[in-house]
Length: 453
Image (spheres, rainbow, N blue to C red):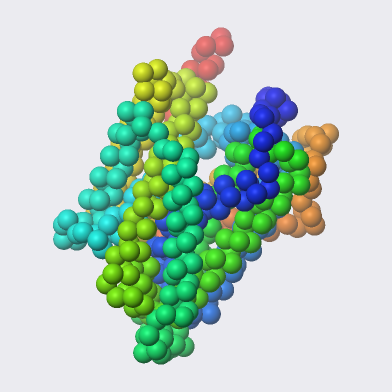
């Protein structure tokens, strides 16, 4: 078993760095897409805001659990390392498989669909399939650029994160202060009547799937744990501070959407940010915010392609069955095979989204059950590691243990159930693809036994 102390790198990150990086990961393109879907699954404006508040609460409870895991086991492997240490190589293998074929590739596809929806607002290139065409072009083009060795600049990434936050602030100001009075009256009517078209066929559980997708990504801070100085203080403050900031922004922007469009207007919108800006500033406002979302979506898609390929590369290095993924191209300095396989899977998922004609939602359905399964297992690892490694130094301990981690695990189970119960065929497809890894695991085990005999 790896010694976590051997995984420490140079301790150079502060609380501010943790907050900046976590906010940059979490606040991406999804926030411009999911509010409409949340509105469509709730019965009133207050229920929609309650969903966003609960999402922040669940995330903070989870962050307390991760604060203990990251400070006790600082390791660049993050969730993979916790699952491996608590449950063994077999479950770590399934997690790595899920990252390759469901979680990471599904995330690439759903971000590409956000790009497609808002690029279509700027320049439609086909009838009903324009968003899917744009999504496929984004996946193929960015995968090729990464395979050729063209790397993203960190300053560009930071700039786009700042631009995304500025865009949210503009939306908040537009919805609360600049939408004409007539639109505001329509909004009030839509919010008070329960959103006739918005709340009818949905469920609060499915609304929470979309909410927590939008909060998703804060757990990526675990991959920074080996580089944070004064780890017990800075990691805990960074996680909780960033989630408080994110929750505040999300509540404000959804309040602005409700004020500017009403629940019915939100639920019926394909591009909710553009529709709000159109109500406030006319066609030019819609074009400008669409351009911003296009940039943010491309940035998020590119970053996910970049990091996802590195995860697949690690899978190839750790497991001989996938050793073709673990080859590094010395000329381009990229994991070329991992990039190409990942791109092919993501393109296939774009095809699924196009076939269902639901795009972004279809990808949420596909990824959510598998994500919540392994997220819950990472939370359960806290209980296992406390039991099997009681001597490990834990600079931060979860308050009110075991109630807080039990609450987090229960929330993950509820989200797993909700994503399967309400998401439909897409969820079953994701679970089926995950299950396809079990025969591969058996094959790997057989090969390992033959090699050792």
